[in-house]
Length: 244
Image (tube, rainbow, N blue to C red; front, top):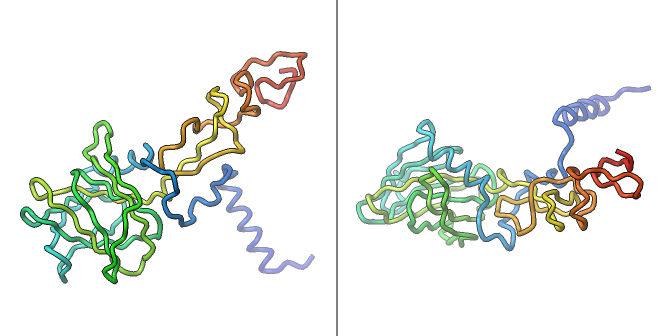
């Protein structure tokens, strides 16, 4: 058999994918860009928890001083996985720059309930896709505002404030990096239907959970934790056997 470079690279790719293990349904799209999905009203605990981790970690703290409007000295807040402590002009709005590393939906988590507005490099205002209060135990973040940002080659202008004490903390998180697969649990037995799911960084719809493997989501007596009843032609515990 003739071995070509295409064969070699194909084999190497196959081994690489195998080493990562099998993919969960739908997660092949995890890195695809997408705007905030319709129906999202609040960000989920996974992305908020990640933001809180940075806000609580002194090693992630970066202090910057915002300018009054966009100037040559306007600082950027573009480094990922950081908690920016932004000093604002006294009693006024402050300006910083942000250039996302990847296009997508970006959440601006704030330590104060202040306004945040974003403009692209042409001066056009980017409408916020979502905004809501944040309440997380042991976390200083109190507000999240989401913007769908498409450019990774130019800076966005971000206006913050004003704020009490002329200072605000900011953490940025990309929604696509914190999506979780939720499965529909129609029968309420705490096991979801692997064929019906949502992949989102938002709070999931009612009746969706992270546990799957329910082989009959219309019968709460059938799930992987159920006791098998022999002789009734029903696989109660979803293990593929009618006898154990």
